[in-house]
Length: 224
Image (cartoon, rainbow, N blue to C red):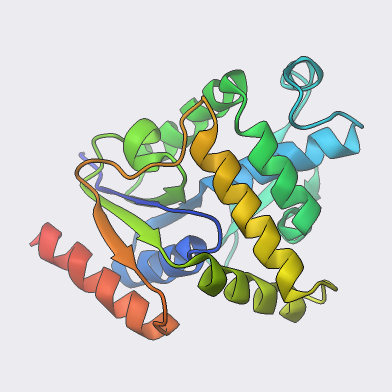
């Protein structure tokens, strides 16, 4: 059986995860948050006292880490580090920064690549990240590059963090977004970039529902 795949790439805070979850539910696809995998590994590095951006410190950790994805009754992806559910913990700002650093290490990306591709071989998937359409699933049936202005993305992330009870301020979040854009776009291993055959969608100023309906229409048109 041939399974269908949708790749959604874009910078931090563009709304990839939120929209991909809604699209997966609407289409009956499995949602795979690849960023959560890197976040979990970044959390492990922090817990082990290793600098996430230092290759020599991170590589010895790879054989030791136990990362597992599970899908609960809510249909959502939960991340487990060993026996612990770290789904909420990996959303902390310091873990986000660690994920960005650790994902720039080529050996890390190779280590996690097969896990991601195996999900697409066994299921109809919507997968979001930074290099899904260019590296992980270059043959995806639909590729979308989701973006918005840094200010718009920072405001969304700020409100999300406040809702989760994380103390922060907008200017700090904006600075983090801009720095992460720089790192993700300039890294040597699978830098953030739009696949040549991806559809660029800018959600600046759009509500969640407006963005969702736009993406759903694009996907349905390509599957007809």
